[in-house]
Image (cartoon, rainbow, N blue to C red; front, side):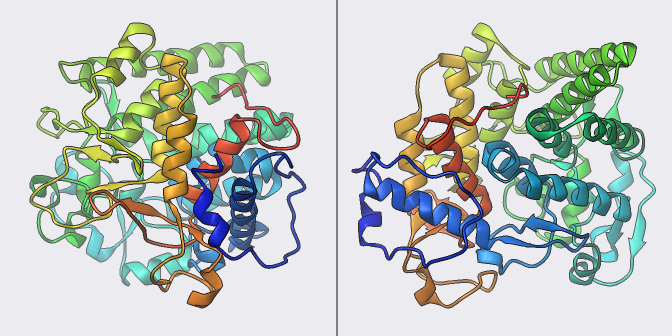
Length: 451
C-alpha cells in the first residue's frame, strides 16, 4: 500500500481540526495510507453542514462549498459504503430529511423540464413549477422528480442498512410507514405490468447530461430530461429489489409476517423480470431498455454491481454476468459504461470512471468470485486523490488550501486525470469502505445484513 499511495508523502498534511470521528487507522500501516485516511476524515467532516430541514447532513462535496441539496444517489452510496457505520447520527438525519424533501416536491418539476412527450411512456400528473430549475432547487433543496427516477427508491436500502446497525423498533416503524407511502404514491406510477419492471434512468446518470445516446437525449439537453421516464434500467430496478427486501425485513421486525411474505414475493418477481428482460444474450446486463423494447447494447458498472449485490443473479449466472462484461478496466477504475458514446465528445458520465461506482463493482466481483480486489480498488482510489489543477465554484476555500490533495469526483478515461468537484463524498466514502473492509482501522466495525 505504501507504493500505491506514495504520492501523498509530498502533499501537505491536513490542518488541525476538531475531529468528530474517534476511529483511527492502525499505527503499523504505511504513513502515506494514514495520511490518506486523515484527508478522508477531514474532507468528510468539512462536508457536514446544517441541513435545510433541520439537524445536519453531508453535502455532496467541496469541503462544504456545495450548495444545499439533498441528492438521492449521494445518500445511497455514501451511507452504504461507509457513512452509516462511521457517522450514523448524521446519516439518520440525512435519510429522514431526504424523505421529507421528497414528500414536499411530489411530482413537481420546473416548467422547462416538463415538455411534450412525457406521457407517451407513462401517465403522470406533473405539477409545473413556473420559475427556473435553480430557483426550484434553492426552495426545495432537491432536484426535480423526473431526474430522480434512477435512485429515488434507494433511500430504503440505505435506511435498512443503517437501522440494522443503529436502529430500534421506532426507526423500523417509521421506515415501514414511509416505505408504504412511497411505493403507493411515488413508485406505483412507474411500474409497468407488461414486463414487471419500473421505468427510470440509470442510477445517478441523469438524462440530459452526456451519458446516453443522442437518439435518447437529442441536442436540447434541458428539454430532454422528461425522457428519464422512457427507459428501464438494471441499476434502478435493482434498487427497487433492495427496497422491497428492506420492506420485508421491516414487516418481520414489526410482527407483520403476512406483509413480509408479500414484500418478499414482490422482490423475487422483480428479480425474475430483470433477468428476463434486461440481459443481453451473453448474460451481461444491458445498459437500459428503450421504450420500444429493444436493449441498449452497452454495459454499465453500477447496473451490474447492484444486480449482483441484490442477488438478481447468483452462482454461474452471476459469474457469467461479470465474466462476459464489456466494461473497460485500468488503474483508474472501471468505466462507468462501455462502449462510450462516440458522437458525444463530452467527458463526465461518458468517457469516465467514477471511483465510487468502481468500488461497488469490485465489491460485486468479490462477492461472485471470492477473489480480493483490494489492489485494484486501492490503485483507482489513489488515482482519484490529487492536488487539483483548479478549484471550481462548488468548493470552499482557495487553491492553496488544497495542497493537501483532495478526493475528486470522477476520472477522465483516456487522460487518466481526476477531475470535477473536490472533496467529493462519493469518493471519500469509497476510500473509507476500502479501509473498513480490509481491517485497517483500530476497531472492528461490522456490516449489516443488507450487504
